[in-house]
Image (spheres, rainbow over the protein chains, first blue to last red):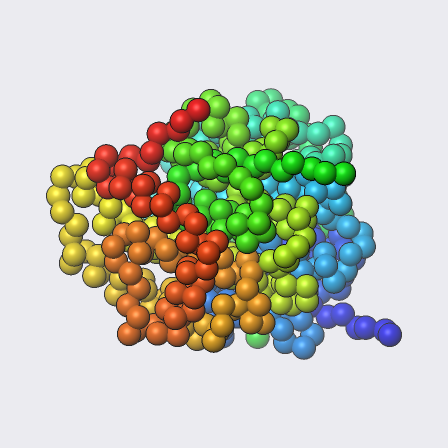
Length: 231
Length: 231
């Protein structure tokens, strides 16, 4: 049976969680359309998609909606098993899910704060980025976030068992916020992790979202708001 | 081959995430030993277990450590598939993981704040619980957290496809914080959800942690700190 697969990925491309789902879809070679959706827009239509009011939301051809990047990736892996993006060994799988959790929580919190300080706070406050504040934030939070990853960074593109997959997509999707903020990670301080990150973020799957990322970042930088939803 | 399975579950029993892993282990009929571990104790031993400094941590017989309740449950499901606690249908699975995420984020944040206001803030501040503050917090946050669950609540014990599993364990583990706080959910306001919650929390698997919960809650209430780790 031939299935025509059409997905719609809702959410602003600056979001690390939208990026994660986007790269995952691309690595699976699945066709999808992207639509902006402002995570701060708690409209009825959006909340009906996702009562937590978060992005991304994946819409299937029959209108079925799936929320949360981790749930979306797990679902896509199950219905499109090839190429597999989760380890088959149980302990490797647990390590991959652990890195996904690490990326989605601590790492995203740290990187998103830098994005806010550089891109959103200036337009909203009318004051330029306070570099002293940024430096203090980095001094306080980067070692806790990145020293561990420096120790774990692989020679290739797969942090778990040298096989590329969900862990790598999740980690790179968070760190990409620093590039979009115009404040990329210090490659001298975390060289192994940075090399690994560069390998992942330069894959065609990750390159394919760059135009959308830059557009959404520019909208944030100039208006202080996410791109508007276009229905 | 006969395997002797020995697990150690680390973490204070007041934590909804420790409770979730505990109930999951019990539903799988797996033997384990529980050890207190203070999530605020960022000791080297603990951080070596889990660089995010969070509980629970599951320790296997060979010393292998697995962090994060969602990762632990996924791992246990894979190595001990029966009884299955995740739906086999892909969309049902996505819905179950979505409820797990809902429980672990919004619902836990709301319920944990009530626990803090009733149990921890009074002993630390020396002032009784400010009931006006509690009421204001509930008025502001409960509808957003519980109205959705009231709509979704099943007649039985399985919120996804009427089959008990990870979603139900996660939701009940969060809401249990309200009981431990001495401020159970208003059954008149959310009757369907409360009935469902009562069915889940009265399963033998959930009853088996009550002594530990009450002990840990009493330690918090009288000292303002988690029970100390006993090694």
